[in-house]
Length: 99
Image 1 (cartoon, one colour):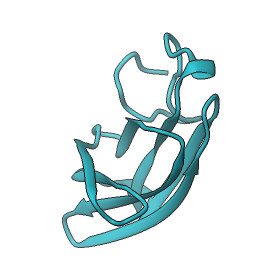
Image 2 (cartoon, rainbow, N blue to C red; image 1 turned 60 degrees about the vertical axis):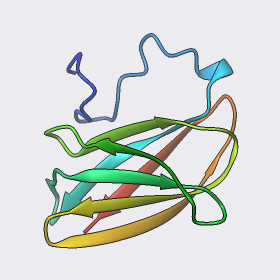
Image 3 (cartoon, one colour; image 1 turned 90 degrees about the vertical axis):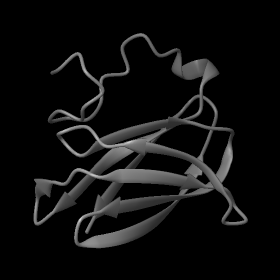
């Protein structure tokens, strides 16, 4: 497991994150099983842009958000893909985006 914000095998480390007090949305972007780098956006339930992060070299991303329904959008070379996710306080919402 790496100490960076990447997504090693088995997912992100949540070491140091008080999951009981946070709403976490995280995951990885891949194409044919290989990680893809680019950007991931977080859109609220109305489709409004809320945040954007670059992926790690392993395709990983993480957002801290309010509880609710969100859209996670991967913007990577060769494609864009969206996924809807329900974020809940005290839980880690895992999202796999395949381009």
